[in-house]
Image (cartoon, rainbow, N blue to C red; front, side, top):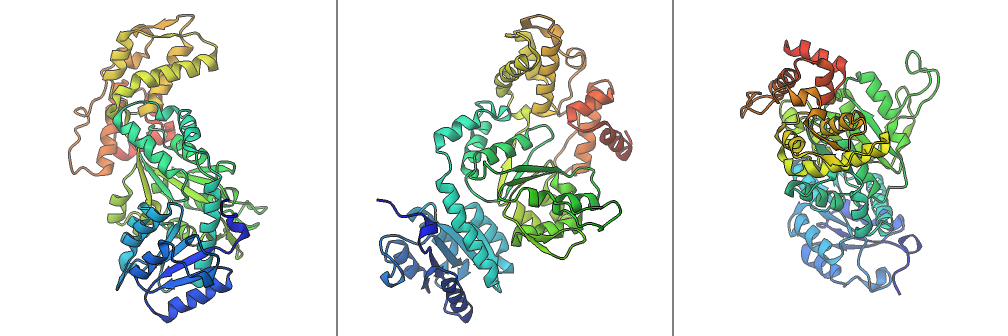
Length: 468
């Protein structure tokens, strides 16, 4: 007979740290908070406990700790090694590491290796207890998650993930590993690669799948609007705020919040966002009451945040908090072998949506699509197929004449057309891509905007910004 649910028994917490008054306070605080606590003062003692030598005086024998709290780097304690051993003994154990300012990057690496969270010294005991309780709740959620077979079936419903290329197989495997966790995810990919669809897939495959998936697109939003949208506002906090309004964080409580184009968030809002990631709490705009939330954050960007952080354009500490788990979505030009499968998927989708009976395309169409550079990636391919299916006019097999004019007559932009070279800045690359795309469609701004996945107003602004 298995163990009773965690909610029906006292959870066990193993503390692995040197002898100190701070650790003694933590042990007493957790004991008062309802935990069976054992304190191991070095790695060897900890390994013995993980191997089953839990003191019987602390509770019933026969099971190890649900939570391990360990110093990341200290004399006779190696937190990373302990993390590996703990996960080998029990893959579901939640490991929380204690770090200082000098080991934040190492702690972030540990979270990628499976640590649940890390806390900085000096310890905030109330905050530590809240993190541990979230960890216990997370374990119970994971126990109710669907098995791998169901997850695989769910995965195949995401058109963006269609394909058998090596890079897509690796991406699919990562998504399956990431989804059941609570860790923050940063998705990097060019415009049109399907970052939002991937975020939705992660949510659907997670223990939070029955809760809300809330999204916010930050591009072109002002600082005040972004802050209000994320954190909500109180009545009278600014002109037009005639009533209290919940922000996206409150709306996503217990669920998932997807923040797109997170690189566009202004510095003051970055500071407030960092606090939510660290403490899971905030105040609404114009308010004093602290709001507590339990939200999984998935962020996306088409810009390299590590470069922005190095240049002082993005908070480095926020970057490290966001990129606990990084997913890089390949552009379509790097997985051309997936185009036929994507083509088939989209034809079926738009046959159903528009009442058409297209059965396929000629080899000539496939060749044209395979040769094209796809600056707008999967989104552009999807839009292209929809246009072809809509204008099929009763045809079952589509040929080159059914392709959009830009694909039939315009020379497609290539990497050589863009004059890209190693060491170029992101604005220089963006200008080159914008210029090549406009040239490829005969400066048809509406078509270029559609390919790039941006609005006409954004296109005009970028043209003015880059003098195009």
